Image (cartoon, rainbow, N blue to C red; front, top):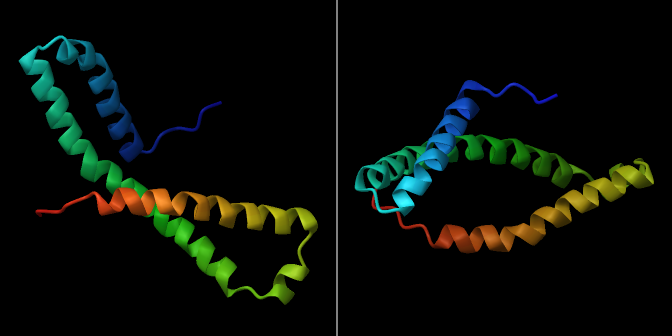
Length: 110
């Protein structure tokens, strides 16, 4: 069973569906479809960014909690819990450089 989308998620999904539907027309050179895809994309950037920012804030709280722990705290966990925490931190570290590289490409004239 799929979880019900929030209103924000549904709005984003609707816009993505429109882009998918208009994509072939835009790719065929239809100027009206191209402009609609552009306008939808422009609306998606801030809308999606707000959702991602909220997720990053929640993830940052998990890192803060993990960072506040001591080796003694972690020694009380099961091997599986220690492994899961370590994998989580390593997965983030692995992708951090890529995210940082992408952030450096963004220029804000706003």
